[in-house]
Amino acid sequence: MDIIKIRSLMPNINDMTYLNTGWSGPSPVYVVDAIKSRLELESFNGPTSPEILESAQKIMSESKVLVSRLFNCQPEEVMLTDNTTDGINIILNGLPWKPGDEVVLCDLEHPSVLLPAYNLQSSKGVRLRMVSIDLDSNHNDIRQSFASVITGRTRLVMFSHIQYSTGLRMPVSAIASVAHKVGARVLVDGAQGPGHIELDMNALGVDFYSSPGQKWLLGPDQTGALFIRHNLIPELQPSRIGFGFSSNFNLEGRFEAVTNSIDKFSMSTTSAPLRAGYNAAVTKILSHKMPEIEKRNLELTKILKNSLSSVDGVKILSPLEGAECSALTTFQVDGVDSDKATLKLWKNDKIVVRAIESQQGIRVSTAFFNTEDEINRLVDAIKQLSKKR
Image (cartoon, rainbow, N blue to C red):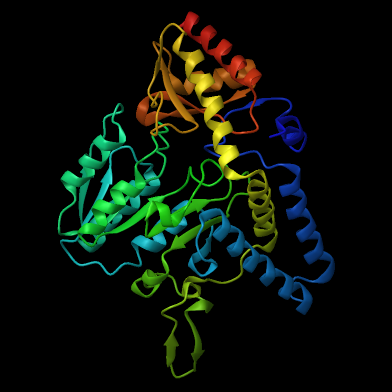
């Protein structure tokens, strides 16, 4: 992988050390150019002229095909969404709930998982069962923890593929296997998945997988994709009704609802320019090949963890090695407030990282475009913070 060539397409990071792709990645010029080109095309030719409408539809269709290659699934199993949370809500509000149904989740989750579940509890009478995960748990420990909480009344098991708080990579297929034995569905928050690690919906064994475009894919905001296993599409009902819900209706209120197609979730006008940028981002990621990107991400993470381990006062909260690792590293510095440290790193060193309030730590994202020099720059800055604590 030619990192110099990749970074030449990202002039927006020349004047900073950007280590926060797990929140939002810096869009390269090919993404920005795709958005600008589409905006200009619509502006100069009319957004609803026949040719432009047709080309917009092709962009949306292309998007589904690209995501299907990224996810190793069928285009018919892909719904285009605005973000990860959008997809999570579509699933939670689309399943047929009964009072007493149980939802299993864990205590490391992002608010975008927890809050929709809390709302489900209050609005549908669903019972939530929380799995407690120690930070030093391995995959077998985590599987057993979920298995001890999943019961015959469990309707849905939902959790993040990679925990935003610590970078812990979850044993998705193992948990899915346990859930499916009792007939439960599995919804995975894939906010930290696409562009970060290789994905295969069949190998993971999940029923639903919601993802964004603006993080590791380096695409624009307000883009994402939701995977729904084909045989489960009829089971879900749209909570918001748009033009995709029915193609046969009249003014007397009669209509034939779409049931078997994922298009039944489609709403009204969407942004072809943003989706063009998303397509450009996914296309480039696929051209680099995900196994190579994942390998590079993890190599940089290992360098970071090894360097941080030697810094006085630093405690790494993320897994240090093994299948539990990802390219997210969360750590604490004794006596240093994580929010203030994040601001100081930017103000003093032009380093962009994130504070994780739930862990009172600093989180670093090591993406494939980052360099060893940038990691060394961060570690030197952390040493200074540690000395002044």
